[in-house]
Image 1 (tube, helix red, strand yellow):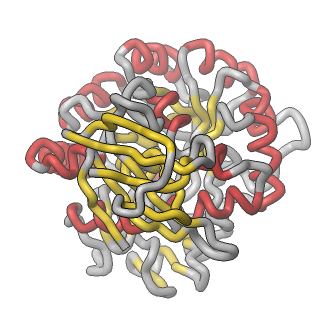
Image 2 (cartoon, rainbow, N blue to C red):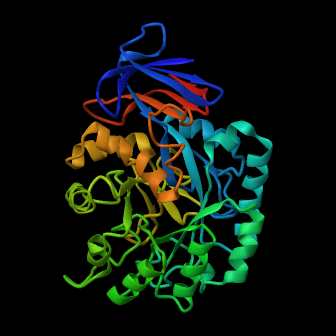
Length: 388
């Protein structure tokens, strides 16, 4: 297979050849017979480190009540992700009962094992909670009744259900036992992210020293009102060992905040994530027995509170907004959903770059004056999974 267009790395026209799921050659120049186009950007496959669900489909078990609007069927979800440019995804399992988390992890693990196409889309799973702050604000929309302290034996049972595929764990480091828990996670090869936390500066520093390497959706999962300084957002911004993920869907962060975070972290320590949930992409209205509402424009809120309940857009929106909100170039914005996620997860030797020998995961797109990116094609492991 040949793919041709404008390289997201250099801006120059390239023609790339993929065989057996890998990139086997990249040459200068445009090939009009190849997949792509002279007005198409060719990028490594967009990777989203945080997706709970989308379009009425959910990786999680029993989150949205008894309504029929959310399905536990998973295969159509991967098609929806591809339509919006996401080639690779870390399915995210949020705070829930032990049984529900275990069922969700095992269900997806079995699907990955039995379906090569989905296996190519899923480098690993993300466990966001249940070991998070119980405090209103930092807890976000996570259910209080299921928030609990870090439990290594429980986590090992989760990892067993996931067949070893949990690669990211988001937690609050101020919880009792969290620092040694972070050390164990790190030694086991799991990337530790700090999130849904109200931790003091010393605890955040101790967490980083113990192995935590990322801040999950920095600026969200936080109190509505914070001291000017010190506070846990400033502390994580200032810590040069922590990567930061942010949600640039237009609802989670004001453009000015996204710009500041991108400038402080720099393009080498910033990842864009969607944090999309099952209600994303659905019509405006109340769902989950009236607990959550999708507003016009895609914003999703917990009814009766000022708190967001996840996001309603995917990376096609987040990358386009990042280009408008921040100083990032197309190349830099693309790196935040390709090379940087690969660096965070330790897969940079095979993913996240347009290089010979790398996995042929590709996202082809156009940048529009308004709205999301226009996704032309998505390729996973050398197979076209979406073409406009």
